[in-house]
Amino acid sequence: MNKNNSYNDSQAVELAKGVYWVGYHDPKDLLSCNPYLLVDGKEAVLFDPGGVLNYSKVAQKIFSIVEPAQISHVVLHHQDPDLCACMPLLEKVIDQGQMKIVTHSMASIIIRYYGLKSEFYLVDKNLYSLRLKSGRMLRFLTTPFCHFPAAIVTYDEQEKILFSSDLFGAISSGWSLFAEKGYEDQMRTFHAGYMASTRHLSKVMETMAKLDLDMILPQHGSIIKKEMVSQCIDSLKSLPCGIDARVTQEELYDWIPAKKSVEEKQILIVDDDKKNIKLLHDILNASGYDTIEAYDGKKAVELSKQEKPDLILMDIQMPLMNGLEAIKIIKADPATHHIPIFALTAFAMSGDRERFIQAGCDDYVSKPYNISELLEKVKTILGE
Image (tube, rainbow, N blue to C red; front, top):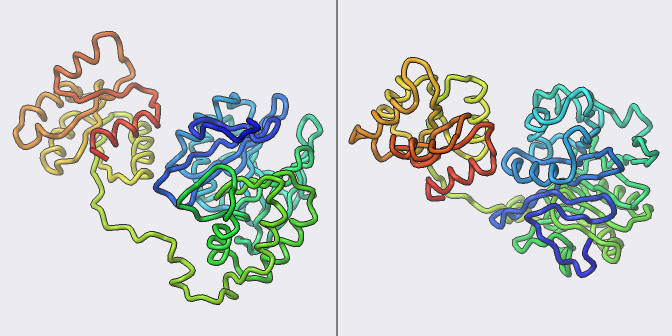
């Protein structure tokens, strides 16, 4: 890590030897999410990889450092979607036969509902520890009802780092990767409404105070360096929170912005491959878009007139009517000619872009999809 704390958060940031922040911060969000990657020789462990919305950016950072085959374990400290909803997408990249999901058995019961196929490594059945191939030891500590009954955190003995999950998280409109003056107040805002009770939080903080810590890496908020560790623990020891909070429910959660009701943009996905449609459906739905589907060009023409979607993603090679024919018909109809269309193709060759533009396309996207690039193009064409 750069000693003067300069960093580029569009890239992975090395925090200690072999320990990386691979998160993504959206300036519009008060609650940042911070996945981490530990690289130990040829083996890698991923911590709380996050949700679907930021998956493409997080994945780019992870795989800029390691190959998928290097990831032997993914630690899920509990089951919340902001922490592990992207796991089905990761499973498509990482061989499930080689990757294990590290969590508590109680959390595993719920995590299974994400439809995961990977084997579980249950910490409560393995002496709350995981020894890596090099001999490096990861220790797991329970943090009952902070906020899940069987929540855990991970302590890396070698680097004296605590991967703290929700604990030490914070709410901030002026996010920075490293905690700065005033961070304790940001933590208290988050913990007061998120932890079960003062008793539970105080007991967990007593455990944290006994650890030899050089750094705390929370899943939300900012990274806490050694000089701030003690004061951050002390600030939470007797915090009135949960059922012991001395404020109203409205005051506990007044940091959550009231969002205006905005009509979802609708996107028509046209492809004869059901797997491709499902992938695009999941990605776009998770990003806040409504989707409708067609499996051939003829049906695409019908739906474009009936539904008048905000955008059409059109496969080129299809039965009954191919994509280029469908595009020409849609663009020739005064009722639908205004709808932007992206061509979807696995065979983008020299001259194809011009051919697609001539047919009426606004742009094209090559298969296999670069999710980040696809979403960026969608946002741009829809004026978001």
